[in-house]
Length: 479
Ligand code: NAD
Image 1 (cartoon, rainbow, N blue to C red):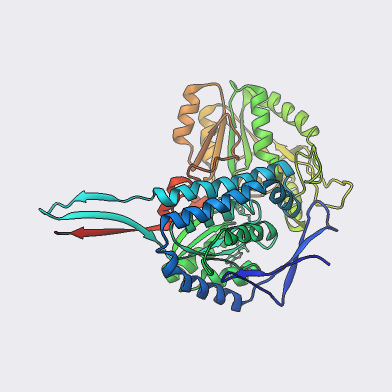
Image 2: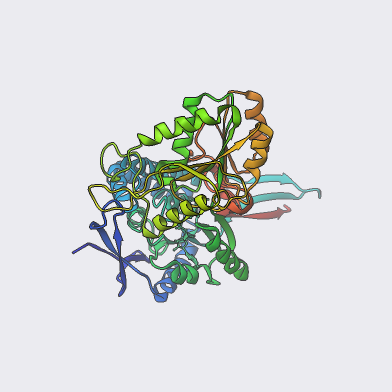
């Protein structure tokens, strides 16, 4: 019998009549656990608990908040191997990446522990004589955090930690496909000394529980990470209730490779950005835009490296790329391989199902050449290990193609030209720009987010997180 995991509401485990298995995508016979599927009653209970806890928690001292977040960070870091193993098992990213993600979650808690005591205000002279103006920041209130399955530790961490650091109460609704990591995280934070009701976890269906939580008039702020489609419905619900909103959604991230690039750097940056973590990163490079002088050498280098990529069980030593997350994602990837072929793209490597010792969702990373910007494979987010190469004449055309997308999360360039690197940094229409680095792979202490259809609202992470999780008050004082 698999272990069962209840919802965590008001500081207590709340059993559920309905449960869903969490299946290991590297080995479909391995059930990680049976996780509660919350009911509308659970959603209501979580909101009521958060409301009840808010007055006291919002006035907790910064030292109390620091201590709890710091203790949570210490436990996450001490257990990062174990948490990483759990993450790799339920989600399919290679163990080293999963341990890295656990370490990042710990570092995020440590960082926001510091932010709790660093939060300051401003004092300004009024334009009127003898009057002073103070600008301070207060907690927003009840925050709902809706998270996806691709970073099931880091993303809940980067929403929960700042929300708590600044005195908010939180309800987390993690993705159905990877609930074990967020469950373990909430358990740790809860045991670090949080009063009951301040942090609540309700698992289950997005369409049902996610929609109930985001549609509640008692919720003051919603931080959502996931697909664009769901993001739009969350936005409509937030607007109806006047809730503060932050959306982080998909990408179709370009990587430009110029003639003057070092070929080894170009190939390693492109392979990492496009295929690591099975392309299931919102910042993954999916459009590789290559100038004609280096095009053929680059494609040869990619294919040569891709032939050697080790695709296997996420927990196996030496695995570079694990399985994709589930059957639906696998079907979607194969559908886009077909779409790419029909559109006239040339599949030069990969794209087929792979068999391994254990029964899992393995596929060979795929690369298309002879593609153009208007093809569906270059416009729609696939979210799998599928990338296409677009051949261009020169830098100017490369920049135009890079920006020819409704998305704007991350973009990258591989070049040895300072002039082109500087120009690209300024003119790429994305929230993140990488020079000679993969489009994915970010630090925990600086702002993260995109432009255009990729994001909405203030940035996540780093000191900028306070823009979303605090509300500004302007006070006038006459002695
Ligand atoms: P998804 O949109 O299907 O689900 C995200 C979350 O929303 C899940 O918890 C889901 O249960 C919930 N949900 C579903 N329907 C809902 C509704 N009607 N109301 C409220 N909540 C609902 O996304 P996913 O498949 O879990 O994740 C993949 C997507 O996430 C990709 O598009 C990827 O680009 C994006 N993503 C973006 C970022 C970023 O920071 N920009 C980071 C990671 C992932």
